[in-house]
Image (cartoon, rainbow, N blue to C red; front, side, top):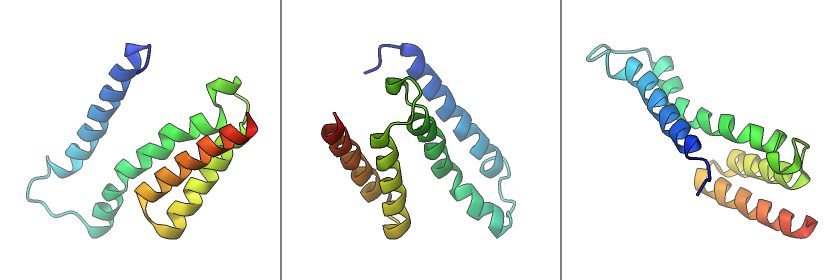
Length: 108
């Protein structure tokens, strides 16, 4: 649990904002039909949020004062590789977390 309750407020606000943006396209249009390409891109909107949250933690981690950490960079590369090869989100997340913990154990 975070020591900063503001973080949870920001997370909830971003979640509501993300939902609101998607609702603007899907909920307010009602029975209008949207082109297939827009529907396809809307499916990936939620997935695009996760890399946006993780990328700063990989490239400028606060635990290393903003310096690139080999453990986090390796875990990110493994996660991306597993996701691209197997196309399984949970497998990629578990593999990336395992790689991070293994690398932190081996380096530290």
